[in-house]
Length: 452
Ligand SMILES: Cc1cc2nc3c(=O)[nH]c(=O)nc-3n(C[C@H](O)[C@H](O)[C@H](O)COP(=O)(O)OP(=O)(O)OC[C@H]3O[C@@H](n4cnc5c(N)ncnc54)[C@H](O)[C@@H]3O)c2cc1C
Image (cartoon, rainbow, N blue to C red; front, side, top):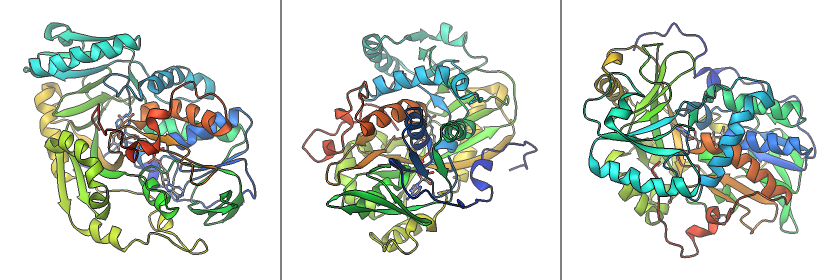
């Protein structure tokens, strides 16, 4: 791959040297574990209420999924269990840059799901009823109308689902900007500060143990992304979660073929602020089989059936690594979270080749365009592909917001607002019961309604 002359690499987010905190607050109303978009948005909403909040991030703010994603801020095609939160999130995105005084690269340039055949178009038509119920501006476009939104695109499209009010933002900017806004409001944002575990007193949360010392608190949020299941397991809380690796690329600036986002089973593409495109494969995800795969396999069968076409399964080193990772550890010694500061999987080279090939087929004007950067991110998913937002109950004061299943960037600010309300006894303004952890254990049917 050619060396990129571009500055401001996406990988700058997680490859800069880390400075451990000089001091860790001794006490806080709320401690948040994880500096992804969900953790920082929650910290921001709490800080606006004047709550004293400390956020601990083991690596960099947005070092994992929250800088590595495609940047889509999408309502279209979502599961109805998370759609109201996403619509609220869209309202937050609309005013975000003005409120925090920083550019986050947000624009409402629309989202297209292209269909190659009438069967796909029929599925899109069905979703229009959901859109109507939620007062969304989603429409199904004929091929002719679709062609007015893109230039020189694939010859085989029959039409598309389109939501003009959908948008995108720049992931490598947005999460850090929200973290800085929370910090300006008084939140303590600590990087290079892994949380090893929590301590309880009379069964309730009494402190959080970080690698740099204890923080006395009665309320904790686990927003630890791909690490949430492991963290919860160390507290004897079962949280079904598996990981899939998504490979992403960014091109150098190129000809204008679309303004917003477009999904086709061959590529997912969006226009970037720098004039290039963020492009991924439309369907291929890698899953490394680990002991967790076996532990959760029955709950994940419906998702597996749905995603099998694009899933590349392999077994290797990851199985042994997870097998050798302790399930519990002494809080006075280094934990597995310090051992992997940043989960930085290698991009799949075959997928990068496939992306380049497919890009030239779908948008002939972009054929041969230089790929400036390729990276991968570990998507964490739940069995029904919607998040878990809950206060599990076995440890009063402990809360989780995780499992955003490949859709958490767009919904992150809305989730942060709802989670902040949930933890402070306010009104989240939404029904969070469909997102409760117990749905995976109380006999409720596990039915994914959308894809990863
Ligand atoms: C390739 C890819 C493409 C995607 N595309 C989109 C998209 O276009 N649109 C969209 O809406 N979503 C997308 N997503 C999903 C989205 O990025 C995630 O759902 C979202 O970023 C999750 O945010 P989070 O805060 O829950 O987790 P993360 O961003 O993963 O943050 C969790 C943080 O917790 C930290 N942590 C973990 N354990 C500890 C500990 N013990 N102590 C301290 N810190 C800890 C981690 O270091 C990490 O930084 C995509 C994801 C990927 C990987």
